[in-house]
Image (cartoon, rainbow, N blue to C red; front, side, top):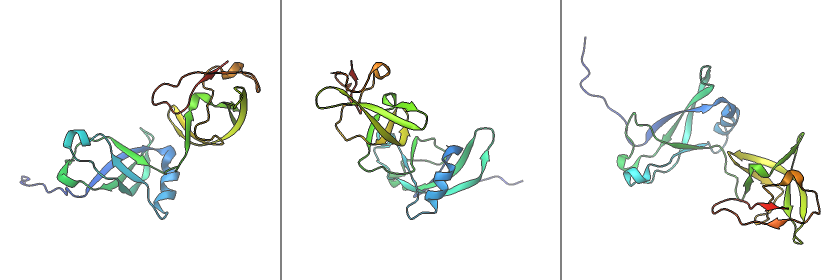
Length: 185
């Protein structure tokens, strides 16, 4: 039997391997065959290495779903200037399936669901509640990118279940960093 004396690893660019929930598989496959493949960026490495790492394209999608985890393995090739990442290292990553330019993001809690329809209450100029139909573009955890709301409009987040169109509402301050404000009766 032989003894391994040396292992060679490519350091620039580096190949990342990650597991993605199978619900994103169709979108990934569509984007991979399109003009601009989805990209993967390493997040949180800048503080540790002092190097900000650029995003790199997804280059491979496995042809099987792991039945135990419900995930699909994908690979991306990411630039590694200064060799901030090492082979075998776990790093936090962000997979960008698409970019919604100038999208309006609101709190998921603001949405009223009625069958297939999605609505929200916004605060009109006269301080009354206005019911508005919206289209959900992309969920983002507690937030959601939507169509049908203009940037800067005040969205009702709390108390919407007791609200009626035309009813007077009071504007409440928004928490720092929040995407939309709360309004209440």
